[in-house]
Image (tube, rainbow, N blue to C red):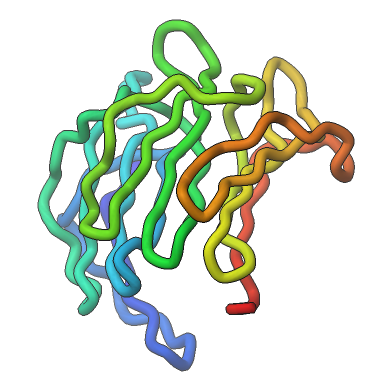
Length: 183
């Protein structure tokens, strides 16, 4: 079974629209994040040939997916993403094609500019979960080094990633998360 470039809009009442096919790239292990208050970007992942990609696609506030854009960031598979500030995002960790797991991160501005690779802090890992919390901070948690891990890294309102906090819950990987409150 291959990868698909299919998207579905979801209404404010949670109703899925029919499939939209043919916009964006085919990838597994990609990330997605909102920025700018009502815009989005998704990208990276495995393009299906076993090679990681640095292709991204922006999403308008009407849900229109833009054509492929090559990011300035390194090609990664299963990175985490989280919101921080009130309108910015961060992509972090993941697995590079060569060299294995990473603690590299990229800040995303409120206009959607993805910053260049920055060597991060914390344990290099992939299959990591991330989300925003409070009204202006982010968090990354869990993941896989060569085994599932139990750790987290906070992201400040200015995009600074904190060192590892270990022993948070049961070790796991492939975690997903979402915010649930604006306060």
